Image (tube, rainbow, N blue to C red):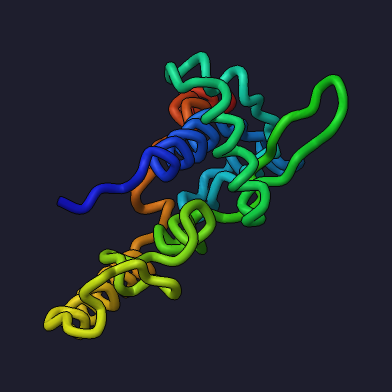
Amino acid sequence: MFQLTRKIEYSLIVLAHMLKYQEIQPQDSFAEDLSADSEEQKVKVSMVNKVYSVKTVAKEYGIPEMHAAKSFQLLLRAGILNSRQGAKGGYILNCNLQELSLYDLIKAVEGKLEVVRCLKEQSDCHYFNSCNITQPMKRLNSKLVDFYKQTSLDEILAVEPIFHQDLKLRREKII
């Protein structure tokens, strides 16, 4: 059975954690918008780039710190995260997860997606020259790649940030 690797799982845990604990910060016109009578007016909220530490994520989810650190580094190298140096340093979500696909994550963490060894550039398969399933496996791989490209990380990790749960209460207090 095909499974996502632990490295991908850990990377998804890191990203889900970041989405869950995003902070919201009202824009200047926040109170005005909330007290407006018009239901067409939307609440204007901007997301704050909260800094996340390897240690915190590792501890909260029981991930070995070394593996959590590796996940953060892979996501940093792929441009999905950014880092901040210093005493209050850590990692920051650097992109919109609606624009990133599961394929983008797999490629960033594991490299190219191949369901069987013979699809790798330097295959060590002894049966490569006489194999009768190379082409069917290429088609299968292509279908999986298409599926993963159509699946956004935001779709997979659709978690309402804990701060959003309080937004309705805060709106009611201001009104």
